[in-house]
Amino acid sequence: MTSPAPSRTTSAVLPALVRTCRPRQWVKNVLVLAAPAAGGALLTADGAARAAVAFLAFVLASASIYLVNDVVDAPLDRRHSTKRHRPIASGLVPGRLAVGTAVVLGMAAAALAWWCSSSYLIVIVTYLALSLAYCLRLKREPVIELFVVASGFLLRSIGGGLATGTALSTWFVLSAGFGSLFVAAGKRYAEIQRVEEGTLGETRPVLLAYTPGYLRFVWTLSASAVCLTYAQWALSRPDTEVGTWAIISIAPFLLALLRYAVDVDRGNGGEPEEIILRDPTLLALGAAWLVTVLLAFAL
Image 1 (cartoon, rainbow, N blue to C red):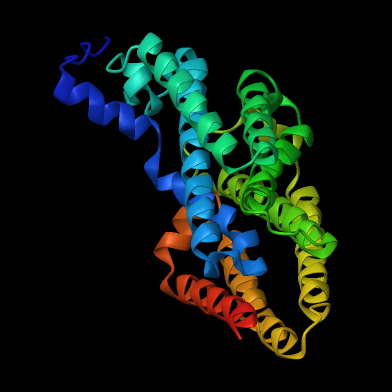
Image 2 (image 1 turned 135 degrees about the vertical axis):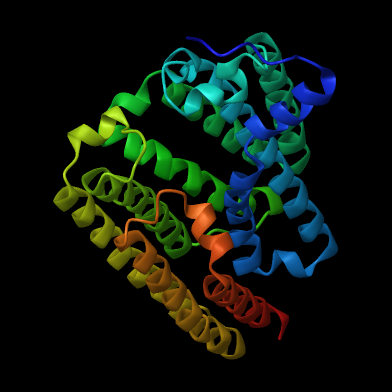
């Protein structure tokens, strides 16, 4: 027996459309501010303005991808016990409306990116292209899908630097890259942990290609690499005062990494943004890291 189609009134469709854009996951786009913060660009009016626009551009770009992803997955979602209630799968939000909104959001994101810089436009276009390929095909390819997910975090990290004209050091890029892989591998590791415990309501088909041992290996390797590369970035800062605060920033950075790892190891890392928002200690460590990095360039 199928449930009746929901009423498509404007008051019902618009909130559902916004919900499909997944506002709770927009916290990932804070990574856009990492390079400007590490480079001191947030301390200038122009840098702060460009960083804000760059953040908004990624919010719009990611929202457009979430819409497309739900349209692509709608046929399968309709056969799922809980996902069939999603706005697009349930029929509350028409597929054409979702796709049209996605196109508008993608174009708006590209326009904002162009205002920041042509290099940042390339980042946004690359993100959109990779994400579309992921939605349509790559999500079913083991290892490749892991690196595509990681690339989304990496593009956010380096994009903020390109948008604000912040010089990106080799160590920062390496740290951002391994950090992105750490989050992506941790996400899959937590999911496979929950599959084994029987607490995950659904199973991604690609998870069947992984073992906990393999994902833990990738997760541990990337965690070790991000620790080393971030420490090298901090230790390579030139000025004495800058170097002192940069070195101090290692402490909250590593503590936050280890705190996050606790949740991942328990199988709670399936949604990184939920871990961050629900953990006051992790938020405090993130704030402490930001303060120490900003002090490194303010003094």
